[in-house]
Length: 456
Picture (tube, one colour):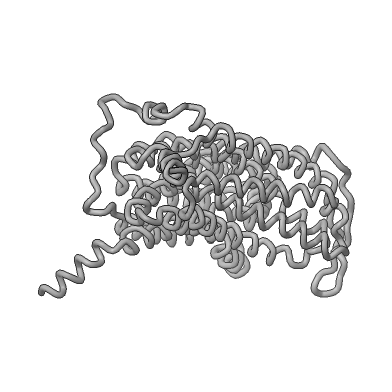
C-alpha cells in the first residue's frame, strides 16, 4: 500500500508528467494551425471560392489568438484548468465547425454562409482555443523548471513549431486517401483526435504544490500597474521587437515556397518546407536554452536580429533570389536565410515569456505574456499581407520551367524581383528592431547586479 501511494505521489509531483508532457500535448495540437497552406487550396476549390478569399481564415486565426491571449490572460493567471479546458473545447469545436461548413460549401458552391462560417470557426472559435491553449502551460513550466525556465518554455513552444512538420504528412495522407469530401472528413476526424490530446493535457497540467500566488497584488491593481513598476518604454520595446520579429518572419515564410521555386528547387520544395519547420522548432528550443546561460536574456534577441540582418543583407547584395537558379553558392545562401529567419522567428516566441518574467516577476506573467501576444495577432494581419502587397506591386512575374518526376515540363509563374523587395522591407524592420532592443529594453535587475559584482 505504501509503495503504491509513493508511486502515485511520484507521478503527481513529476515535472515531466505535470508540466512538460501536457504542454507538448496542448502545443502540438494547436500548432497545427500552421498547416493551413497544406489544405487551403483544397478548401477554396471545394467550396467554390478563390484561395485569396479563404486565406483570411488563417489571418483571423492568428489575430484572435493574440486577442484572446491578451484579454483572457487573467483567466489563465487565476485558473489553468479552466483555461486549458476552454482551449480544448474551442480548438476542437472550431475544427469540427470548419469541417461542417466545408461540407456545406461543397453542397452549395459559392455560398457566402460557408465562407463566413469558416472564418468564424477557423478564425474566431479556434483562435480563442489557440490563445488560451498557448498561454496555459507556459507559467506552469517556468514554475516546475525554475532553474532552466528557457529550456522548459522552449520545449513546449518547440512543440507548437514542430506540429506542422509532424502533422503535414499525416494531413496530406488523409487528403489523398479519404476519397470524395476528404477535406471536410479530415477536419472532423482531427477535431476528435486533438480534443482527446488536449483534454489529457488539461487533466495532467498542474502547478507545483509548493507554489502560492503572490499576495502583493494590491486591490484593484491591474496588469498595466505591474508593467509600470518599470519605465513603460521598457515594455513597449519588448512588445515592438516581438511584433517586428513575427512580422518579418511571416513575410518571408509566406513567400518561402515561391522563393524556393525561383532558385530552381521546386522539386524539393516540400522537403525544404519540412527542414525549415525543423529549424523553426529548433530555434524555439535552442535559443531559449542558450538564453538560460546569459545574464540578460535580451542578449538573445540582439543575436537573432544581427543574424537576420547579416543573412538578409548577403542575399540582397548577391541578388540571390533573382540569380540563384543554377548557382549552387547563391542557392545555399538563400536557403541559409530561410533557415536562419525560421530559427529566429521561433526563438523570438520561446524567449518572450522568460524575458518578461525576468523583468516583471512570476506573479502576473500569464496576463503580461497574454498582453504581449497581442503583437502576434497584429503581425498575423500585417506580415503576410505586407509581403503579398510588395510582390503584387513591384517587379514583373516571369514564367519558369519546372521538370516533374515523370519528365514532363511544367510552367510556373514567379516574381523574383518582388521577393527581393520583400527582403528590403524586412531588413529595414530588423534594423529598427535591433535599435529598439539596444535602446528601449533595459537590462534586468539580475543582469545589473551581476555587472556590478563583476566590476567589484
